[in-house]
Amino acid sequence: MTQTTTIAFDQAGLESFLQSRDEPDWLIELRREAWQHAAAMSWPERRSEEWNRTDIRVFQLEKYGVPGGPVADDLPSRAQLAEGVDLAGWIHTTDSQVTEESLSEKWAAKGVLFGSLERLCRDHADIIRPHLFTAFDPDYDKFAALHAAFWSGGQLLYVPRGVALTEPLHISSLLSDGGTDTTHTLIVLEEGAEATVLHESNGVDADGGGLHLGAIELIQKAGSHLRFVDLQEWGQKTYHFAHQKAVVDRDASLQWTIAAMGGQLAKVNQTVDLVGPGADSQVNGVMFTEGRQHLAFHTMQHHKAPNCHSDFLYKSAQQDRSRTVWKGMIKVDKVAQKTDGYQRNDNLVLSNHSRADSIPGLEIEADDVRCTHGSTTSKVDEEQVFYAQCRGFTRNEATRMIVTGFFQQIFDRITIESVREALGAAIARQVREYS
Image 1: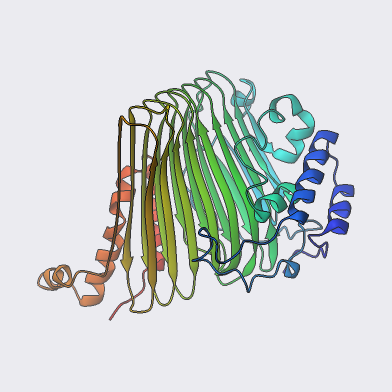
Image 2: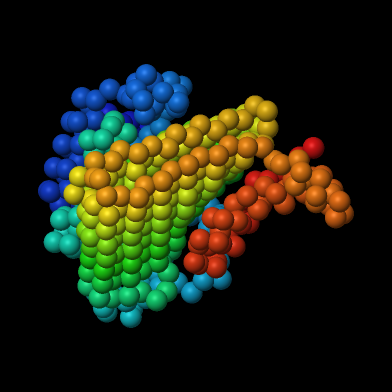
């Protein structure tokens, strides 16, 4: 463990945390307000619909400290998405502290901001203050409120009107064994702007523990286009709680790809709000679990304006005694006529003891819509195994090929070649030999 701080997530810890920071008054007020709400909230109850499939009774917040203090500078990087890619800039974070940031001068000259959210809150409050916490809701639950009070090492991308970045940007968060990460990622694209962001979270030790208490805000103004990739490979003993939300305005488009491989227990709320006519979103999700991992994703496609399109596809594979939970909802407001919404979750159960819970849903108030949803859960098809064996493959080779091919539909939807290759390699590492 490289993180030495012992500051707790309590009132005294908040005061110590704030004293160690150089932040504007408006941000300190937001933190204090969030802490007051967090202190008044109870932990989520198991009998509530959102948590009845995810048991956090063994989670103990007091085992983890607020981020701060020195971090090791010799930790090995596990970044994958940026290999072989010409980048416009990058941000490296270790245990919720920004250790390196860079942006190409040609984009800085066009008004692009990319770097530490903490630093830019001081230097560019006029840009950040109107957007921070406008997509993310600090009052959603106790985890969200704690994050709002104690976030650290955040990252910001701001792209001015009409600026189209032609090279990707890379954000990496590294977590040491036993460390804490509370990073907040804020991305704002003004009208007509374009960007590609490669975001990944890794544990130093594949078997390591720790706590991630994070949030992502994606804010897109009219006519903007964003490709956002999020690869999560925390250590297998890490707790991962996150609130992630995009707000997509008129004629803007979002392609959001998520891959979740790590963590002991994960509970992620992912929402896309389509708030302007003609807004379009595509979300591609991959979950691959092993051991006793428990990954729960609750997704929402909220159509708030007419003539919008949303497409969510999640694919999950479960090994050993692991479990995934996917609960999706397409919500269509009364004014959102001509909505076109689609959601699907496919599961490949690879052992007799693993489990997949899949709960798609619709909540429609408009009367002129096309909304479809579906879910499948199956095991490896014995006929496919037999077919491959007839052509010279061993049973293990055939099974590995089928498991890898199960995710091909997701890969085909990804428009960035380096990301397709990185996700394919990450899944290949997970697939073991099967008898």
